[in-house]
Image (tube, rainbow, N blue to C red; front, top):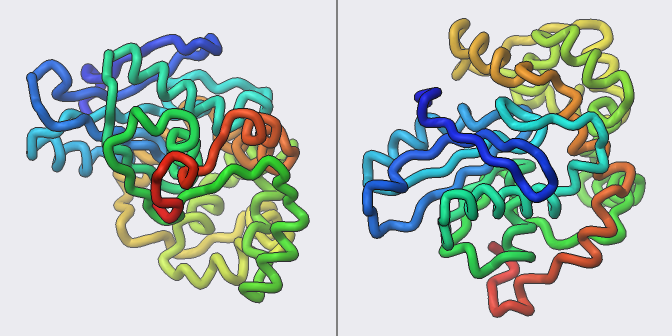
Length: 271
């Protein structure tokens, strides 16, 4: 996306957010589309979608979320409560005087988008969650309990890689062996997630040994380098802090005090 179309704003929490914006000044009667990325991504991952929808006359807003790209990347994991990040996103909308958006969110972006459903449903005309669905408030989130439940229901621990990403040395380790990291997160064979990402300890073993696998075919050498450059612009500490905040329960209090279920708002809980 055109770097000249990026703007910056300061949020109530004092963080600087960088975001791509297009078409807001064109007088379109269509609601702007707000795209929220996940891990490990940046606003640039939405470039083709932004191009498509602006071509259909939709204004778009595509922020780099906290920890990514041109946006602030605090080291303290307490800053990464997704409820608080949702409030940051509202500050971005307010900066552009946007009252209502169509939300399209992926992965951790879907978690943040879910918090927008909870705390600011009046700002949403429609929502679409990709890869994962709506996240209800989890004021009592317990990682160990989630692992037990996943094993019982699905036969796999599912979230074992969270421990690597949430650890003190995990971000640096992944950055040091970035090609190994990419071959695990973006494999040509997604079966690798079952054998070497989901089980406890396997992701650390893969990255520590700098193991390599065939990367997904949608990457060319050029697009892979560009993706890595964007992701590593501020390092991996910020992106990994989403996992650290969740595992350590830093988000629980916010989800208990600020979030409400969409059913109480007359909204479909299976968004």
